[in-house]
Image (cartoon, rainbow, N blue to C red; front, side):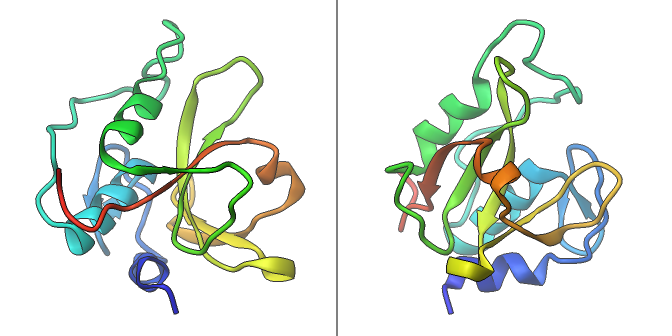
Length: 144
């Protein structure tokens, strides 16, 4: 099994807590990625400033996408691999602001994510979710 998926599945059941990144205690979708980064890569490469639930939407600022490009390795959008970080745009013309980890592949395609009102969960990567994916990334082997 892919190491990233194994790590992400350990987070399943962690309650959703906005801006948190602590397995078992609470995290949001970014906190899940930050927690996996810490376990897999090490020290976080930059400070994550406080952010609101709508954070960069009013300005149309793709801050999350830019940060992902700075620290993760971009993958072709059509390349589907377990362990990839998935970046989602939840509405047309909105900023991309949801993250998950690709887990199951093929007919059992799934992803692990945290979202408001739910604990970290593994959800089917349905057509509705797939059409929202705007970017795929891999974790680096070492911090830049």
